[in-house]
Length: 156
Image 1 (cartoon, rainbow, N blue to C red):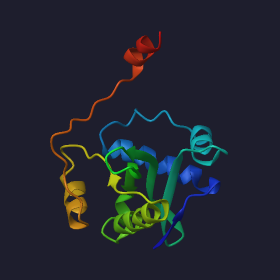
Image 2 (cartoon, one colour):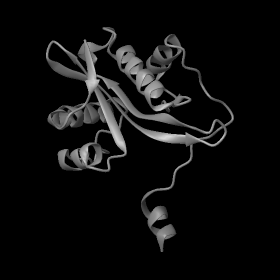
Image 3 (cartoon, rainbow, N blue to C red):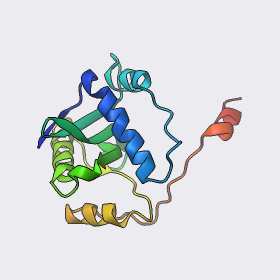
Image 4 (tube, rainbow, N blue to C red):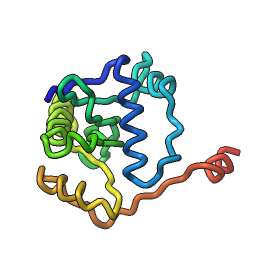
């Protein structure tokens, strides 16, 4: 396993894995990202989104897409892991743990206090994995979102 920061050459593989993640999460038609939008988001001069990839036998088989958030309570930034996905063929080989280790190293390098993420309530294999590496479910906070028409209406 080789884990490294993504490069522009990885964009097709990143998109392929994002689509596979959407299929796994039962939302196969939800992906609107394109190679162009990913390249701009991840590799523009003022990129605020980052990615790590894991390679196995020369093929990108996993991704971690993340960005920085901030905790006013700790007074430090944190990493928000938007997506972690490992291709089915590479599960159980340590790719997910290797990606999390790379994020832990990024967190230390950037002075981050924590890594946060969300998991679908039915995804027990992911929850089991997160527990195995020391993750814990947060309680009390509910995830909220505004998007689509409501976001457009708010802008008006």
